[in-house]
Structure formats: structure tokens, C-alpha cells
Length: 207
Image (spheres, rainbow, N blue to C red):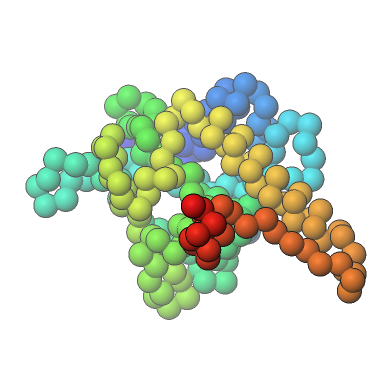
């Protein structure tokens, strides 16, 4: 008898948490919310860094498909989201993976995708009160499809998540720093032009 969808969901969430903690050398802390009203399976943050974290929605499939008799294998993931609960936020991400039942682990690669990117590129279709999304990334080693930038090897998942958190935190801190500078009418902000841009405006200057 195959495992149920509830069992699959629990296994996938626990496997995801394991890979994050081990892959980050224990730096990533993982917490499951008591309620899931905002479609958050996990809240994660870097240990000792408070006031900043990511919300993660975990999705999985069991089998891969081949399109029209081809050799390439695709992960076909489809699910609905109630329109009133759709979240496009830089701190809300999707983790999507294939659970290989025979090997009892995730197949490589897995995917970490910002919510806004996923909702835009996963063939969104409105049907009544729901948005339906379909993601079908190529799972072969060599591919240049639209999901390729979000592929992650399972053993590198923790390090990739650390990079994502650090990049988002750095961007937020820079934004807050600029916002904290009081405006002054007698101050002019200037930005250094690139050599390429200045050369394009004045070709003789390069010579």
C-alpha cells in the first residue's frame, strides 16, 4: 500500500528541515507555526540573528513524467491557492521537490523559488475563487528552462538558504539605512557613471 498524501507531506517537511540544519552546519533554525492560515509550513532564521526570517511553503510530487515520448524527465507540480491568500513577498518562498519513494529521499535537483517569481512563471490561471499554478521543470542535468536559476542540489540546500537569507538581509539593511537619512533640500546625491556608459556618450574620450 502506498503512503498517503498526509504521510508524504510530513516526510517531505521533515526531510527539508533535516537538509537545512545539516547543510548549514546547524546555523539555520527551523520552526513550524501552530497555525497555517498564511500558508507557511516553516519559519526559518539564522541562529542568533533575530528580527529577520523567511516563510517557506513546502510542495512535493512522487513521480516524474516524460513529455510526448521524449527522454527528458519533468517534475509536474500543480496546486491551487485561494486568491485571498496569495502572497507575493520577497520573504515568502516555495520549496518544491520530488520525493523518490524507492530511494526514500529527494531526487536532485530541488527548487527554491521566490513567491512572486513562482506565481508569475507557473502558468497562473484564475478559476473562481482560486489561482491554479503548474510547474514542470526539466530534471535532467543539462537544461536551460525558466526554472534553471532556482535549482539546488540537495546536499547544498543549507548553504544556498544561508546565501538567500544573507542577500535579503543585506538588501533590507541597505534600504533601511538609506531611508534613515533625513532629506535635505541643499544636498545633491550623485552616482558614479560606469566607464561603459560614459564612453558611449563620448566615444572620443576612450581614445
